Length: 194
Image (cartoon, rainbow, N blue to C red; front, side, top):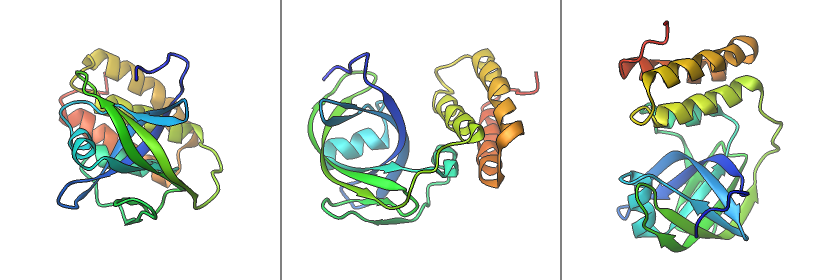
């Protein structure tokens, strides 16, 4: 199940379910290879644990970048609705969602690779495209998810560049999400004013 270098990574929210029924949402880069979706969570993580035990999840395609920033900064209470054909839930503000059954996985370190078969694919609303600020928030969310792996200088450099798009095209949602991510970075001891 090694990921092809030619496969594209799509930034989504993966919603998993614990054995006790607790719903967990996490931003994740997924890819589609040969008609299957590959999910590669880091170990250890709640997404990894849930997928290993429950073997079903929902892939949420969403344009509200506050969800990406929120789940990384402790804001996990996003409304969900029951899935149609699996035991799980999807985000109520998702533009579309795909329900997956995990059919195989490689338990590699530091990231496992879960291979999912699409059970159900549902469109809820049209996608109107991202503005530059939405892209900047998603890229900043990726940086925040890797605070313990990247140097402070790398994070400072990337955030300085991404802030240009925020200044030029951000609306209220993007500004709120950006603020959450900035606070998380500064709480980690990284000075973004340098």
